[in-house]
Length: 220
Image (cartoon, rainbow, N blue to C red; front, side, top):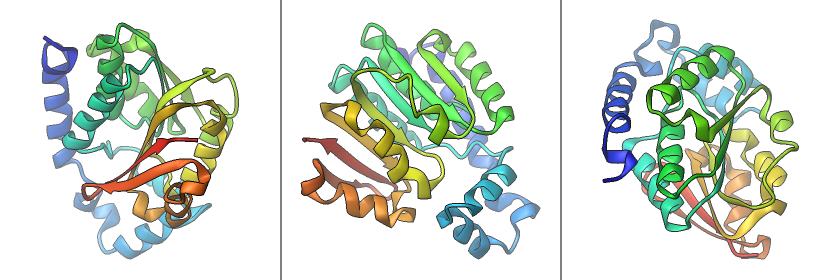
């Protein structure tokens, strides 16, 4: 038996992912006819704040497949220290924290600038019995992740504002363990980040994984 596939985490994830399927930004009248504007804001280093503020009531989760991938990677490297950029409702956080539980413990530091989402994530982690493994830092990730980090980070999930992926990686890079994995969701919206991790000269092996994820490994 593993935490991911048993009570209380398994039914909780089933419910949250089902709710997320129904609660997608494109289903809201707020975003009717604004797909192009949304894409522009997603790529903007300043406009993303406006975008994600408008999306505060949407879970914006990773897919189930990506969640399972996160769990498998964390288990495979026996992760003890994980950093997540973009908590949202805590769905990806549940996958990662479940892996820490099954690894025997550890710490997951995650960050979210929208206060209402922090409250939702805390409630979901408490319901899943995983809150003791997670520290949620509320605020701008460029500040919340600028210090007080583990000496060695085994896995990173980037799933916040896409234009900041490179900046967040720069904050964490000196602490990445050899062989650490970095999972970047929807990284096609961050071409500078992709160019950086796909250059072996920068100390990574990297490749697209499925339709949504860039999977990188620290080799330097």
